[in-house]
Image (cartoon, rainbow, N blue to C red; front, side, top):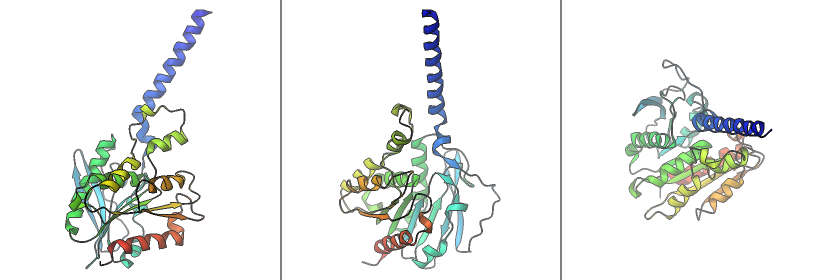
Length: 279
């Protein structure tokens, strides 16, 4: 009987170890849901939207850049964890009406970007490389650093690491999370914290932004009131870390449907206009 019990305990321990190993090595499949595109894919976009690439170690990132003749500034936009630029870069007229350029990059494995995401450090380095590829051309003009869902943590981390002279005018976070660790705790409470290789601490990054010496970006947080994936209390908690942050809770909106809600679009317009308006 004792031998049987020891055997069962050993089997259970082996299964737990295998499950932990699968989570450790395979969590990219849970966090990131890229949709690749063939290299010769043609985007159905107007002529003022240009394709560009950014070389990073082991991969080439693909980006789209709306370039206007005399823009008032730039929106550097980091999208969510699924799809690609074909599904994210969908309404250049919205940004054109605000007279701002728009730059959006696909992460590794998304769209026409090559390679695959293997670590948080790699992902953050790629985002910084994309920023450095475009932001210097807008020196002296306001830049809005925007993130949506997954991209909010990346945007906050990027902003926290920039020197004072390169900081954006505004940090615009849509459906942000305190950290991926906090989301994992809520959705997968039985998974040990030590297994998550992508903690993405938006809270720590936002605190660093709010306390950095020198000029700091304004902070705007927008969130669907009915968001079940990332509840709106994440935005409220983040706002408490950044004195002066503006919070907009969008009535009736969830997570994926914000783009169809006029109140949300109005809030984005107001935020961007406040950042790029002449001072």
